[in-house]
Length: 157
Image (cartoon, rainbow, N blue to C red):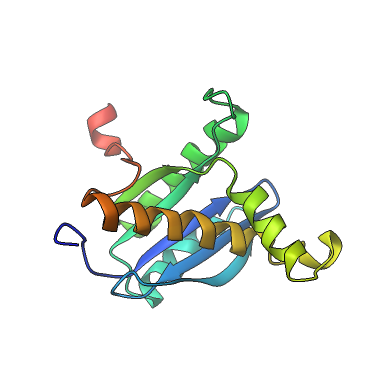
């Protein structure tokens, strides 16, 4: 565990209607749900507020890649949202492959006895927990942060 960076991270699952947010503790032991943010023009600012409230040092944004490994319109949407969160928060953003995180979240909720309808309000948070937990587990096992850093917007120009 020598390469693991201590500190709170936020995990973000970007959807078209809602954005799920999760956080982990300073030691990266456990990811827990934080909030489901309505997908409005204020969503990126709210994620930035949550990052500040929880004293996060980085934000991991789920990047929905198709099972075949291709990017989709949802991938482009998540990248755009990640850029907005970076601008609002000033924090480093890492893009993490989130294939199957929502599927895993639905399965976990189903296994706990919840119907899909009763899960709708929290499935995005659970998906954020799944992607964040996977990311911190990867970093602990490899010593390398999961995902890829979002390029600095000034470097893209």
